Image (cartoon, rainbow, N blue to C red; front, side, top):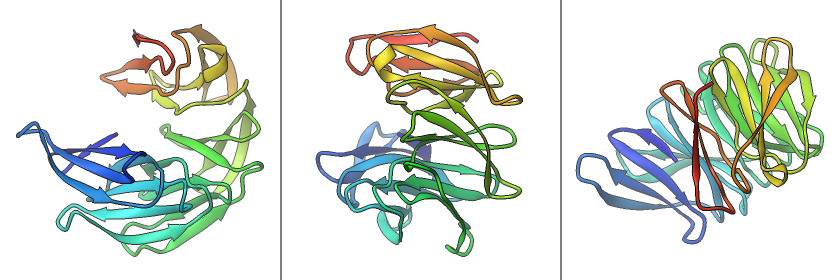
Length: 219
């Protein structure tokens, strides 16, 4: 889910589309066809961006055309985030960094066991890995400079209150990581199967994927 160009951009894995929903009109104005199993979406640098897990690529959507205008292969693509003047997308091949002005791949960053979900703090990009770790990528060097061992399947993290909040889905909690030291600060018990953390006005919102509740947390 992302917001930009007056619209929400919502990935629909079942129909292989990104739905563009007009905020002003409160209705869907376009279902943009994308690759198989779209997993994540963001809006940055004037475009919507989506990952296709099934096709293994990052896709750029032009909001003026409501169509995909460029794709990049990276293998079982999962997360995408816009930060530090670039688009960062993850998959089994690791992380690619794309220049939105030229569509050039600026860097390919290997991640052991593949990259998962993404978040950006004030000075780094954070990526979950297939080894249940949270990896820190320095945008100055395009290198992994630290990692934090967490537990089980990790969900989609967010930067909230100066910390990185990472869902530990099977443990029904959120791991809160200090980005300055790349260490686990504490864990917060939440609902059953937390899958994503969203930051809204300095607060964390955490839906229960296997439950029926949404947790609102003030850091």
